[in-house]
Image (cartoon, rainbow, N blue to C red; front, top):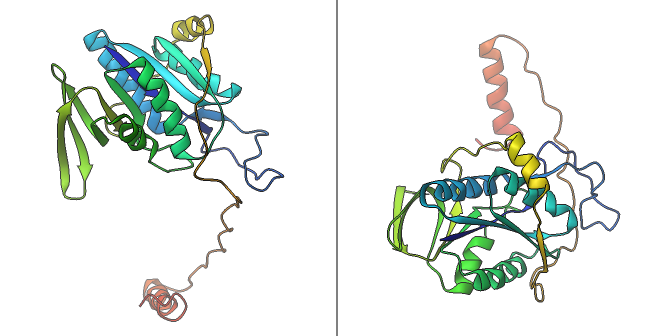
Length: 248
């Protein structure tokens, strides 16, 4: 059984990002790049299935040369193969096309994604791949069980836990709570350095989405300190909510 896991390289949440000179991309200088956190849950689930069922785990990333770092990390954690689909696009449909084309060739039993990429937050690529390939899907899963050619997944819905059942092959997007991602061991890190990362051109096609401009959020206004005792502070706060914030 083959399991395909899609990972994406994103800026660390603690990195202070800057807008590049073109006004529509991030300045890569001094940016620390990491694996998108939700993708870590997807990869961990694949590795647990490998250990339980003897599956083969293939990690794939659509990105540029520097994205090899996240693939190398996937190998260090336990992935068997890593493939870089070379190309850059912020269009989720274009990325989904590239991943679906590769998956069609690989024919995995499961395709795992994080439920969304940190930063862009589209939450669309996994569902788009399932649609392009005509496969069943379960999104935002917090539990996954496999049978003989079947799956049972639990996901968080508005009314509580929802159960999704279907047949394999299928596409899943992982949510926090599915598992607890592991750390790479020193042995795994050293072994990963010797492994080859396959490179292919990404079949992105024509983008349907383009970034025209990128701006940082406006700076937060300074807070206000309320004076007096608790009763006076409460009265002042109520007045501000009524007269300035207009929420009462």
